[in-house]
Length: 223
Image (cartoon, rainbow, N blue to C red):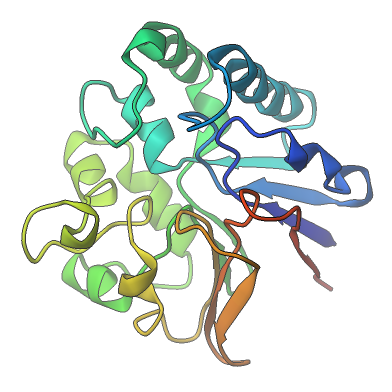
């Protein structure tokens, strides 16, 4: 299985250069909206396009939730920067109508895909463990209490003092030396000049939020 992961879109169009036709599985790591430079119209079209892909081939395309997506899906909870009040009604409507298209996490073997990453500290604090981490994280979203845990903003990104960011909010500084043992994570959220991996063959975290700097995508073939 050839897997392709695409970093944060934020209304950009260069993701369309990804070789999606050659991939068996395409994972978008979230943050489709709240562009700093592109129009509301273009951003809306990008959001609708990825939803269309998911609706057309639901097994092939995986749409993860980022902090900017959560801000509209669960409005008025979980606010974030660059929120566009003038688009709130429309984007909230789109996210809620197609809520079944989105998920918090996706897992292939011991590879875990989330928007921002899971730190060991956050996982230990909330009792997140086991071999089916994606299922555990996705299940949390089903209850208000679970969403409070999942969508917590850490103090690094402006949350409460001492708070650890959850898998849609964790900053690179929270995960780069505190990633999960025995797991390989692929995440976006923190902009990077190029795709880079920290760790080794036993555990690692790879940061792929690069579309603001260059057009590049994470790819791997699974047996």
